[in-house]
Image (cartoon, rainbow, N blue to C red):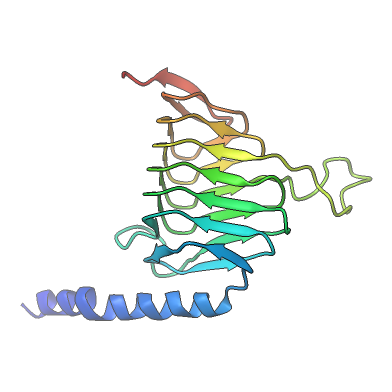
Length: 198
């Protein structure tokens, strides 16, 4: 009986208070200059950069009953003035996501579900050529994640990738090339496994 009461107190009182205090802390630490709209933060998110971060309607960041809820945060940075991170309506982003735009932007379509430890960027951050590696302007290319996409946990999406509407990206995938609509894809590198039955 005491164990049951303890679990109930933690779930109903301690956990929400701890979560709220962490969310507020990271809001205070956020330095993003141009944020449009708002999200529902169940886990902390650090917003940074000189570019634009856009939240459309009903965006949720974090999941209570999911790994990394108590010890990580989500990181969104629109690094340069021309950078854009545009998150569509009814999007759920799980804990410990990292979304960085340094160039043409990252666009996430409506009704998309994203698992834990998600990483996406529209840049290589550094040049591949060793003689140019420390130069400031690394190659960039827009990333588009379509509508109603389901992305598993530990997925990385690289610059220039488009993921088509309704597609599923399996856990632990490295998406280095575009994936068409209405397919299940996975692996490293990520490849189409099968088409979705419509």
